Length: 208
Image (cartoon, rainbow, N blue to C red; front, side):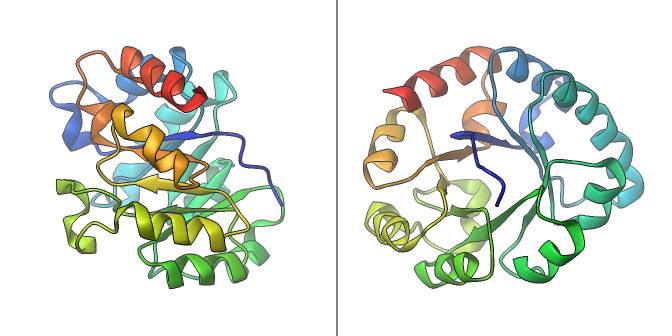
């Protein structure tokens, strides 16, 4: 099973980048020590996503930062990404593992303790659990799950759990105390004026 050696995962959403380009923000974040990127531009067609993915890969590969693509196993295989992140309604990890082999990461989005349990049993390398707190980007997944359910999911998981949804530096301590291996972050990084400073703040919070 591939090792999950990152505690901070940037999940992309170019709509939160304002007038700035997503690749430029990722370049700044990687330079500041961002350890992993999940490319999650779900509204783009494969024709639109391909050149964006190639540009971002040129940034992450030069710094040996894992690039994980949302749901597109075909794109991951074509560009030799480090992993794929499956939605809760995607293919389960087991058949994906049979397609991609043992070296690449498989992450799974989970929105309940039962989701997390199923992801564990079907071969996920890590699970992203949330939303933990209220956040506009995750309202479609229902009300916040809170720290109590996060702690329950972490206790029942044999693979790392990354908390997502309304995660700020101030909340890192709480989710880590609940048992989370780390955090997956969208707006708290992409909406910051200085994404490099934000990355450094998150890394410090995760190390204390």
